Amino acid sequence: MISNERPSPFGHRPYQHSSPKPNVVEETIKTDKVQIERKTFVFTLKENPRGRFLRITEDVNGRRDTIIIPATGLDDFKRLFEEMLKTSNDTPVKTPLATE
Image 1 (cartoon, rainbow, N blue to C red):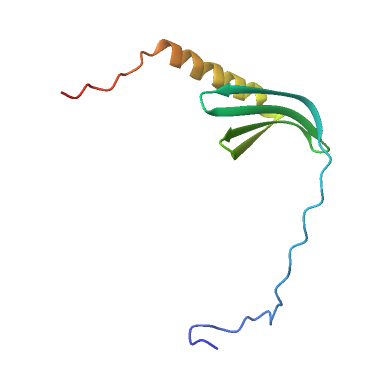
Image 2 (image 1 turned 120 degrees about the vertical axis):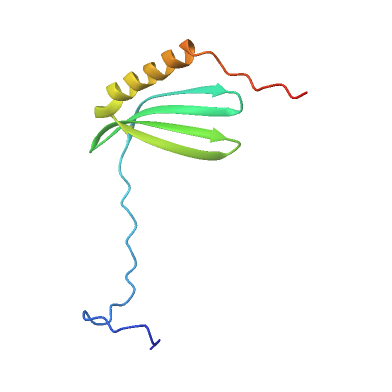
């Protein structure tokens, strides 16, 4: 035993392999995609036994990142998105200073 190691009061527990998650059946309701510069965004509305959700996947040269928004949050997401869009349109773009 290493000097700073103490025996567990619960005894020795062998390493337990976590069982793989069971496949959850997901029904695709609608899918659409948009290409913006070098990024592709895929929007997929799905449903499973836990409810509906929107999956947004960003694909950049084969690297994918995904966020999932439960249907219960879509109205809030839309509101925030519209606020960000309005602010972006109403705020002038700052141009970097030219180096001399």
